[in-house]
Length: 105
DNA sequence: TCCTTGACGAGAT
DNA sequence: CATCTCGCCAAGG
Image 1 (cartoon, helix red, strand yellow):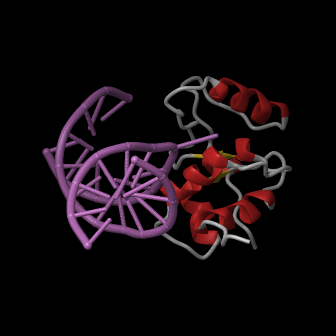
Image 2 (tube, rainbow, N blue to C red):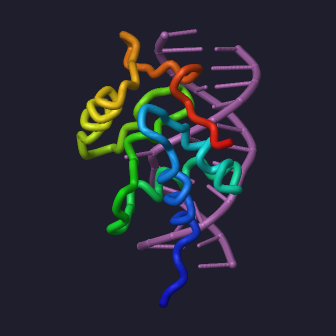
């Protein structure tokens, strides 16, 4: 049984994000006890090796925008999924983090 | 072991 | 608001 790459520990935190809320990559990392690992949260989602029930679409960057993946156009899907949960985007495609960001308590 | 790559973030200009 | 610079750090080549 190979040891899990360290970044897989972020998945558990992402699973706790409630519907209608979002978290920034940095916030997820900090909440997982690994501050300054924002970039690795992205790596975790990129791989998502068969992990199920992971609400990856509830993770956006610190500006409240959807981060581009270089290829794949799933970024549109992400917006659709969020809007379906009630998350609102302004005319510039940004989320109002003051209202929709979630902080574990 | 060194070098490059990133679904990032904060600050300065 | 648009760019740019720098800091950060695990993974993979």
